Length: 186
Image (cartoon, rainbow, N blue to C red):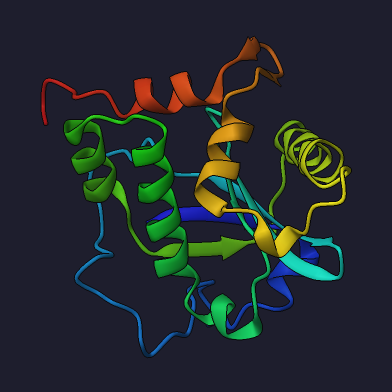
């Protein structure tokens, strides 16, 4: 399972059961499975941001600050957030240059999302910075948020140094690909 720490604005819109799991009858259980080992992909923060009157999702991995950006989401997209997250994550990794072994490991580590409203101010700060990069770096020239490609936008965001409290600055792409490096037990 992957813990997804959501903003209050996002968690209020998610169809969750009492355990924080999405109520999605269409969920593809073959893709999402329980991981019994310590999961390095656990703990992401998710934010619902409004850009040009469109709801967009921004996910940030706590340990690596690796971002995922999904523009112009609809209410129906939120019910299928497990699959949307998994598809976006794997596609962004591929676009970022992940090896076949790293992609296989990522697929193996993906699990169902368990949502809560816990927060970490440092990760929230990174999320705010990514939001500013989109707003002022990509959209300030008159572009439309619906024209932003989620995978290449996510890679563009991840290819910038981001500060992590106590660690200094890291490159999210390098951190995530390093995290998914083939371990001796894999």
